[in-house]
Length: 452
Image 1 (spheres, rainbow, N blue to C red):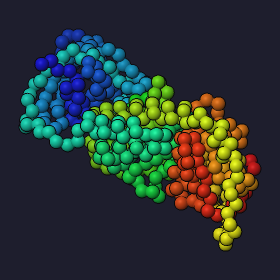
Image 2 (image 1 turned 90 degrees about the vertical axis):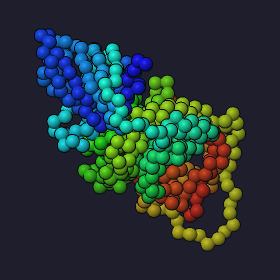
Image 3 (image 1 turned 180 degrees about the vertical axis):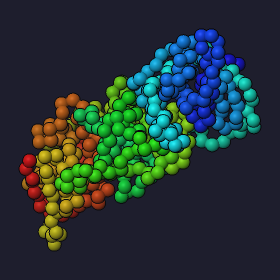
Image 4 (image 1 turned 90 degrees about the horizontal axis):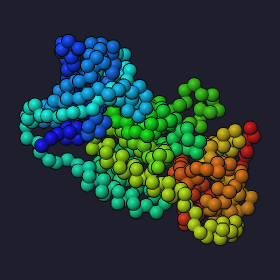
């Protein structure tokens, strides 16, 4: 049976270096080890271009090459005949290989030597076995296709964006057995991703509200280039500063939420959530062990992320029900005045107009659009006694200043709800229906607005 790269994809994980043979125009051969051979599709692969050496000279003069690759589990060997097509120095393929090479370099102590100059793309003409497996391959372990089926059904049963976040995170943990995962959404400006939920880091370190700029680290690169980034050896170059407090002015230092993460990850995989060419967010998983995530993990999580992206866009576009006007009118009615009782100490609320940040009892909660939303809710509650609100009125409110297109309000409300729960705040948001929610405040409010 004819083989292609799909049949031997595990050989291109980078666990065992490939051997590459080239010839110059006179037929003189040259053999070298490759730092990286990257699967592109069943008929194409990419090789790392790092040095202006004999191999590079031969490839440009005579584009036909042979590779010898070894399966990292059972030791079978395969020969690949390929033809050089072109070199890419930017874009998704280049960035994916750059990230992986950084991990390999860090793992082998070659961080100062391994620098990717380009991704050399090759067409594969033939794949043939050279040596049979050294031992019989047995089944067992996680069936990713079965896990994907269970996860897809779980995610498909989501009724809104909030339940989608919960179900997606639970599916990755329960069905794929991945302990550490976080989900991030793209902000309205399209420049940063913010964490809306995580698993495996503890409630005190859930990271809701922490931000990652596009192009920064594994998550930012994957999101910016709409391509999965998988690193099976951790690297400082693609690691994150868990907190951005250093170097910030004092007043801003306390308003940065640390990104959750393992102190010493061995493997990381970031998958973009994209639909119809538009970025929605990113799914990120990590492990303390090297070589934890395989091509099958990447394929399955990429498929799950695509489904989640389509659902998220649908939920955000159709978050309001046909009876929005009625629900908004109901929300505008003040709550019934409760019977007088012993009043607890007031909840001190500070709002900074400069960045929309809100502090409850000197504890930083949130900033930006979510901060503007919280400030409006608390102010309306204090002045009018309101507890019921709708997404529609927030979207139309000039005080919040949402953009006309792609406002991401639903994702911001999910973030705000989670952040209030994380801080065990005396103000909480409770969902009461599609496009409606209730503000629950357990202490009288003392509001202070700090002008720009």
